[in-house]
Length: 286
Image (cartoon, rainbow, N blue to C red):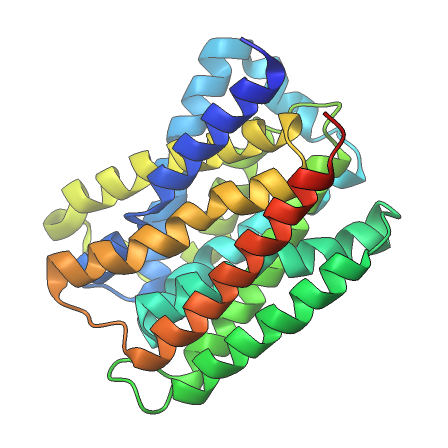
C-alpha cells in the first residue's frame, strides 16, 4: 500500500469516527466540562494504552523532551477538546460542525505564519467565500431554535485551535505525534478536574462516556497519523465528512433540526471548500 493511499484511509476513518461526537454530547445530560473531562480521560487513556503496548513507555516519556511543534499540538488540541463540548452545549450541532469546516482557512493562515507557506490567490478567494458562509450562520444564530451567536463564536475559536494543532502535525511530520495525543487529552482533563465535580454523573452515564471516549480515541489517533501522508487540500476535503454527516445523524436520532440559516451557510462553506480543493488537486503535478 502506498503512503498516499494509507493517508487517505486513515484520514477518512478518523473523520467518520468524529461524526457521533456531537451526538454523544447531546445524549449525556451533564455539565459541558464534566463531559469534556470524561471524554479526555477515556479517549486519552485508550490512546495511552495503545502507545505503551505498541511502542513502549519510552514513547510517552519522549514527548516531554519533544520540540516546539509537539508542544504546540498538545496545547492547541488540549484546549480545543473542551471547547468543542462547550460550543455544542451553547448552540446547534449544525452551527458547530459547519463552522469547524472552516478549519482550512485558519490552517492556511497558520501555515503562512509558522511554516512560511505562501497563501495563493485561490486561497484568498476561498477565505472570502468561507467568511460569507460563516456570516450567514452567525446571522441566523438568533433565529434558529437551540442556536446562539455565543456558541457560534466559541465554535469559531475551536476551529482556529484545531487548525493550529493540525498545522503543528504537518510541521512536525518527520516525527510521529501519536504519543502526544494522550498527553494532550489527559492533561486537559486534569486541568478541568480542578474546577468541577466530575464524579456525580459517572454512575448513570458511564457506558455513553466510555463509548464517547472510544470514538474520540480512534479519531484523534488516526487524524494525527493520516495527514502526515497527504496534502493540506486532501486533508481539508476528507475532514468535511464530519460536517456533512454529524448534523444529519443528530437530526435523525434526536430530531434536532439544523435550521435554514445553518443549512444555507454550511452549504456555502462546504461548497466553497470542495471547489477550492478540487481545483488545487487538479493543478497538482501527476
